Length: 81
Image (cartoon, rainbow, N blue to C red; front, side):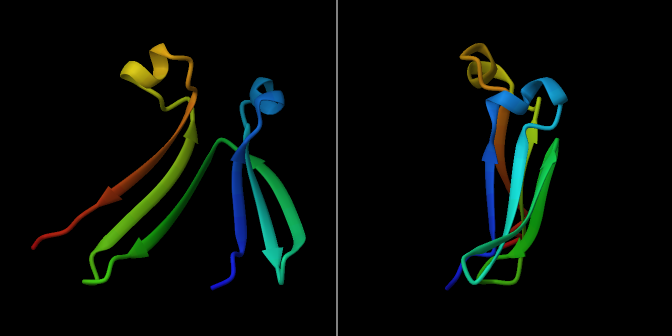
């Protein structure tokens, strides 16, 4: 399997409100970079149920927020079995 995107948080871009950096790759070569507030991808698990993966700036709560985290990765699953 090859990777086609890299997603990372950049503290230096926090003041812009868009510190989530999405880097697109083709054959390991960077073809584009953009800063966003939120990145998400919809996938399906091995049983065909939807799975959403998202990274969003400003979505931290509870212990993560109290510890200083501002950006959290969330995985949402909707399995009915």
